[in-house]
Length: 306
Image (tube, rainbow, N blue to C red):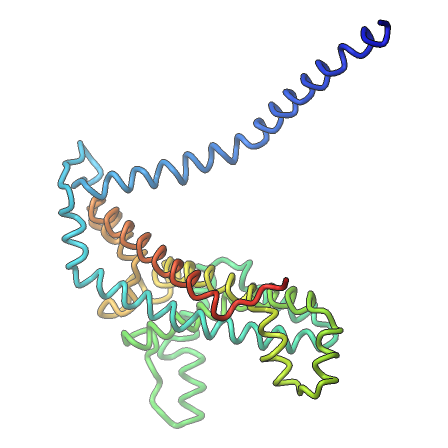
């Protein structure tokens, strides 16, 4: 009986301690949860509702139904923005990932690679506005790049930022350069996780460096390649700051007008928040469509270890 009396309070104490743990857990999670609600969920819901209204930022929004979507889906500017954004994504993602993998493979075989990794990673932690302003000076018609090419090939200085197509390629160049470091670091981590025994076995079987790369290294890195491609595509679809600073807003003849800049221009430059919200929903649908296509295609090239 004495044992029963002494054993009784223990479960109550444990239950009370668990409740206290839950309260502390809720306390520490609350800031992040409130931030997500205030700065992510509520703005998304507000944009979704505004997409069906006409509102200039003042007064009461007027319900217009699907009129904003009809306007945007037939808008030449949105069509140009979608094409430009897809060009940036299609150009920068494959080139950026390929260069990152090659750079990671080279760095993985040399000493003092930590110094080079810091150099490659520096643009990642640098303000995108600062990067755009530096490259803006380099790519001017009287800048360093045009001057060097002019002296080497005897051609007239090129106005990289004054031509629609060249300006779009300049955005792609800066995007690849600024994102290379992060991809290199991630691929370096993936390379170092590959067992040397696997590579040695392939070498013993007669596989050369190139064959080992394509038949062993690349398949083992395919989950990382897939993950980085999804993230890179989403990031490319959200290109804004480089366009806004590097080529002064939408560039010549809207040659660098992206979807996010189009959303900004409608909302904050023209005060047409209904049209801006509708364009943002179009961007969301395009992002989901491309991401779903990538997940559907992963079965053909992504190899997960058993």
